[in-house]
Image (cartoon, rainbow, N blue to C red):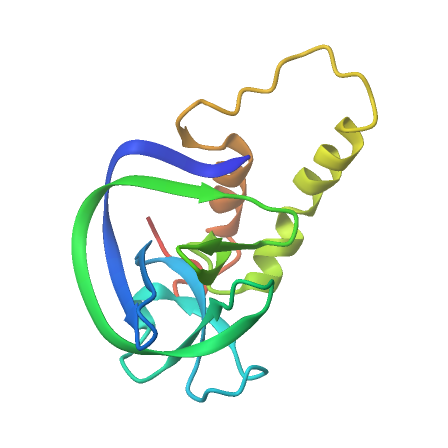
Length: 164
């Protein structure tokens, strides 16, 4: 499913380029894995707007493995089209760069736990006959993600949950 899907929505994007010629456009409040070193075990998720030149992101080697690649350029721009798919693992590879599925909250562990019920329902539905169509083509913020955000504004301060 998509946590957010809107082909017309304007958003701020960060264009990230690496030394290995990987590039990615990601919304500023989307989480991406970065490290200050090129050691593969030192990566943590952070908002894309906080990535700095000289840090490392994880890129695909084409064989289901990831390796660090140094960020060499960052540009900010406004563009249309916001897409935030939710995967079972909570990660997604976009243009060869490993990113998180989550945004707006800067704690991936909380975000992943909050969407556990959605993943559980998906898992259950693959084993039973479900007579109702699930609309995956509609645009906008998914009702579950919207509800979590609204609840979260009462429990998390601005340093954890970005105020949209």
